[in-house]
Length: 106
Length: 106
DNA sequence: TTTAAAAGTAAACAATAGTTAACTTATATG
DNA sequence: CATATAAGTTAACTATTGTTTACTTTTAAA
View (cartoon, each protein chain N blue to C red):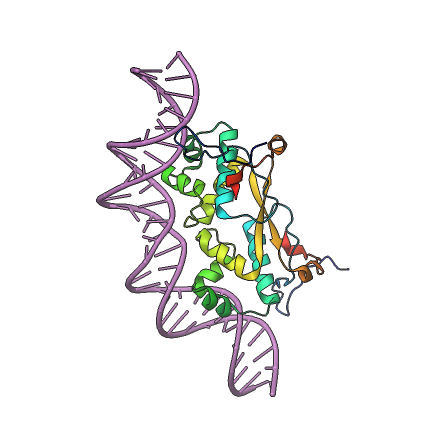
């Protein structure tokens, strides 16, 4: 299997459309690519999603470009609509010891 | 062990200060509580963090209250400073099949 | 190769998140 | 209790994100 990135006839890089495995720490760009991959995998256009969520297309494009200058609420709306969610990673092993969770966490 | 939430002398609920286990899908409030728990566990004050990151205290308070009307960039700055990061969960099992990741994911 | 749909961009404006500064309320500690 | 530190709030203002509309570029299919 080739390690070369796919390019089109003009030599321009072509974005992959498959969901990456982001079970580990990832960059905003990687998250953005995962969102696009999920959306296209669900056969939804930018307008499909932006209209369903009442957010503008330019904003959705910003989100799918990995621009972090967006409102958290808008990112979460998009992720929830596409069936994506976060889990949390903590770099510090010591914090794994006290795992008892009090009632009002829920 | 008691199932009653901790309260102070006035009967007001007291927030727990331990890191919750957020390896699964969580709410913005839960994330906020995890951030506060991590910060206090590191013995850092709101001002310590806000000054280190050049963000205002009111903004940091919004983040630690689970307000999603904040800039994603500011949330990520705080998380990175405290050693927290996200991983991604996808609710759809079918998307786990195609896990091949091309070069430009990195 | 035409054509239509989707993606992506741009600019002017509206909406709102962020800052500053000052203040009040809690929490701890001598 | 008295004091100091941290937490949390408020209001006026500034900075910036989000919207709208329209346009250009890509992509894919007839």
